[in-house]
Amino acid sequence: MPARRWRRTAVLAACLVLLAGLVAPSESRAATAAEIDAAANATIATFEAKYTGAKKMLEASPGVAIFPNVVKAAFVFGGQYGEGVLREQGRSIAYFSWAGGSWGASIGVQKKDIIMVFRDPAALKHFESSSGWRAGVDGSITLLTVGAGTDLSTMQINQPIVAFVVGEKGLMGDVSFTGSKITRIHPK
Image (cartoon, rainbow, N blue to C red):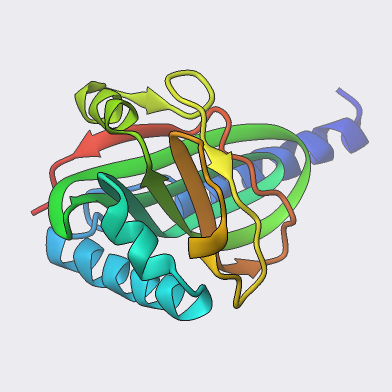
């Protein structure tokens, strides 16, 4: 193998190892239920402060899944991971992980908070009963991109599941949910 090709392969392998360490969960870093709930509360507070009518929308929905601090890292190959909570009527019902992988022309690191609002009870029931729910396969998530200060109570939203990205930070302009897998977890 030529020296240049070997170096590129070594650099790519090192990047993959680094990404795996940043994105993949480990038992020692797994969040507790209390930590997930606290982060979810902060995400909801930011969401309600950013959008008029957000609180009313959340209260009227059969369920809301909140995934604070989903981290995505990529250098050609990428991955993302986060832990969240499903709430019904304001009560934490179950905990989930959000994981996904990608490849392509992506470079960077990004942190985002994702709020999935279930507008349809049947979509919520399907989500709760699945052992590994995949976005774009088991259900379609409509990503709503609205500006700060938008009044959500005036919007006609007829989709069964809508999602908002709140508190996006980092150097990656890609917000895609397709292929992400959401799996039930049992935090301490």
